[in-house]
Length: 74
Ligand SMILES: [Zn+2]
Image (cartoon, rainbow, N blue to C red; front, side):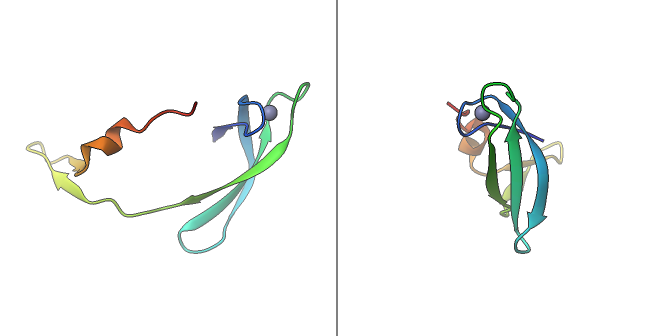
C-alpha cells in the first residue's frame, strides 16, 4: 500500500501495521525518497459503514453521490 509522505509528498510504503481496535488500524510508513527524506510516519484508518442503494443492475452504490467525488491529496 502506498501513501504520500507527510513531509515531502513523495510516495511512501507501508512497513507494518496493527489493529488498535476492531475498526481502527495504525500503519507505519517510510518515505520512498530515501536520499532526500526517507522519514517514517504513521497513519490511522477506520472502517465505517456506508449506506448503499441497489441499482437496476443490482450493483451497490453509495447513497451520497458526493462520496464518489472525494478531493485528491493536494
Ligand atoms: Zn518524504
